[in-house]
Structures are given as structure tokens and as C-alpha cells.
Image (cartoon, rainbow over all chains, first blue to last red; front, side):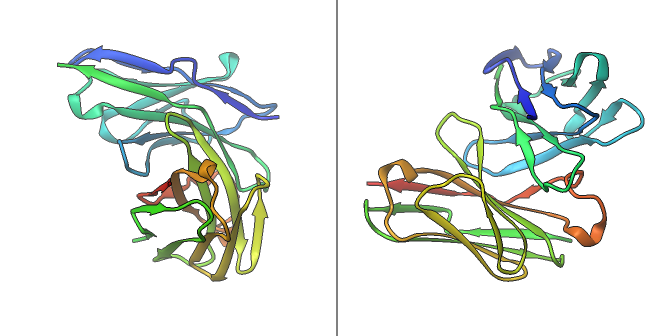
Length: 114
Length: 118
């Protein structure tokens, strides 16, 4: 069965520091991969997606993610964090079948120190 | 452009009362529609999804139900709410079958409904 693991429940970084949020997936083939961000009391906003091709994907708000097949990972990065990036981040996997569903990780809450 | 509307934003209901949450999508046809629940401090739990009018798939057996009376309308209901139904409910849509491949389509979320059961 497919699964997504976000090993860090909370991460705290200083404003201006770099950020990396980890995501590992379990799936027999190359999945479709997504990162979402959720501000408190809001819905989820799509940051970026990976389907195929270049393994380094650029997203909105200055985020990028790199797909590494050998490590079954799709980590999210940002070179310089802003206070407005404080939110919860979800990694998700979509199967290459007709199930229409995404499997979400449990999320990582990002706190930004001034 | 496509938009998704979800209401109400906040709801406080007594135990045993009925529930109806509504979600509508504009700017697209034949979308896939989804209901999720997010308990406090937890991830997303898929409750129902629909690939067409009247077609509902249930992911978690419970006292909730979903209906899709129109192409772009998705309703979450309950006849009698339980305390455990409290949470943040999110509706989402993704492009449907007519657009080709399926779960490579990202899901787009509404702003959610905060449901508190007293």
C-alpha cells in the first residue's frame, strides 16, 4: 500500500535561514508527488507538483522540491525563510492508476523565529 | 478560472443534531470532488470522493454521508452528529476523466468548515 511519511512533526527556523522539509513515500513505481501548505484555519494551497522529467521542481512562493528515486524522497526546500512561511506543510502522493486519490503525509508544522 | 466555495465557515452543533455542509465548484465541468476531515493537529482523512453525479465512494464507514445532486455540488450530511465528528472539514476538486490521466491531477481545496459539537 502506498504511504507518505513526513518524519518531522515540528521544525523551527530563524527568519532568513534555509529550510528543508522531508518527505518519503512508499510506492512500487514513480508516483505523482505534491506539496501543499496550510495556514491556520485555511484550506490547503498547492505549492508544487512532480509528474516526470526534471527532478528539481520549482513552485510558488520561492519553494522548490527535488525528487530522488533512489531515496524515495521528495524534500521541500527554500533558501531563505520569511515569517509568512509559518504554516503546516503536507506532502502527498498520487497513484499512477485510476483511483483519483491522493495519500497525504501527517504534515510538518513550520515555526519561524524572528 | 476555477473556484471552490465551501460553507458555512464555522458551525457549532449539539450532539444528535443533523448536519449539512455544502461545496460548489465553478469554472470547470465534471470535476472529481472530495470531502476530507482534519482533526486537531492531525493530517487529512479522506471521507468521500465522487467522480460524477450520484457516484459516491466512501472511504471510512461512519455516520456521515455524501451526495452529489449536481455536477459541481457536493454535500456532506449526517442525521445525528456525534462528539467525534468535531473537526475541520475540507472540500476539494480535481480535473475529471475528460482531462486524461487521473491522480496526476492536483486537488484544489476550499477554505474549510470548522465544526464543533457540543
